[in-house]
Length: 129
Image (cartoon, rainbow, N blue to C red; front, side, top):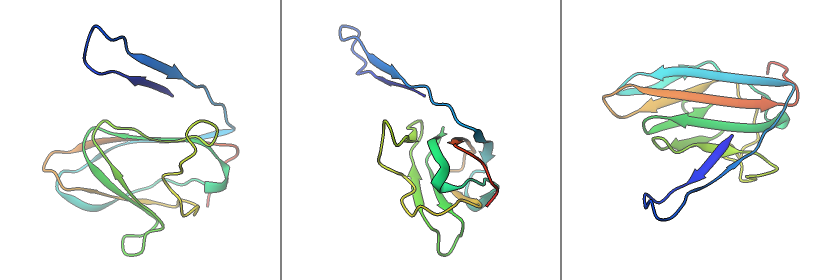
């Protein structure tokens, strides 16, 4: 994972940081979320207790629900080009606070334009949930 802070002013240098994480397994999701869609199902499975690091990035605004459309364990608002990051050692605020295993995602895109969604979850070990 790499983070950078910039203010658009060339006289003020940007800062960046890099943190490498290793794990026993990685869940990887790369998909297109259709435009003007509600609760598009995306198959993604990971055990919450084994997360080493998580990153979600989309090029448009999305709402992501975990495990259910009607009573989700968590609901995340993902803003365009703003990564959602969880790394207990570096960024300890968990964006998926219910601590439930993830068995599927349901994604809503209110915009008419399709959105690219990328998710990486590093786990100590991976056992399908």
